[in-house]
Length: 147
Image (cartoon, rainbow, N blue to C red; front, side, top):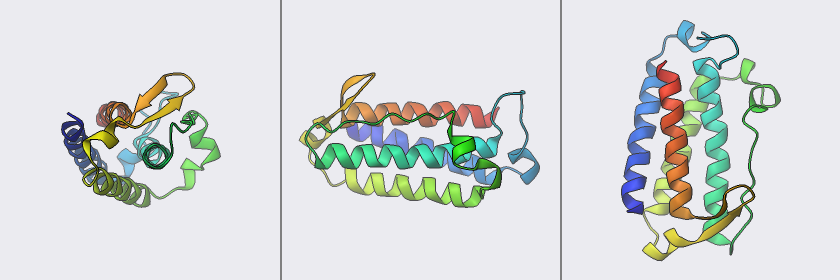
């Protein structure tokens, strides 16, 4: 089951990155609805959230029941300077984080997928459940990018 989620995550990541790379510069900065994120912001957000997710996985795999620290995605555009960031670097970061995640999870035993971390809002999460949440996050933002 977990390896299937990993394959779905890889597919969603490839689709996200291919779609992001194919966007014209004028599309990247277009805000579809006032108050919504531009495609560039969505791409930067995915790069930043992937860094958070990767740390969560590393902690779960190497520490007994670590705390999973939530992040405030609404603060990211301002605090992480989305206006001046390079989309190509964010896409490369997404691809690298995914490659590292796949490399790690391709080499672990089935029991490792059941290691847990403690999220303050969601409670105890297995590595497998966290990967499903990460996949859902990716798919949701892919749909946002397509709009």
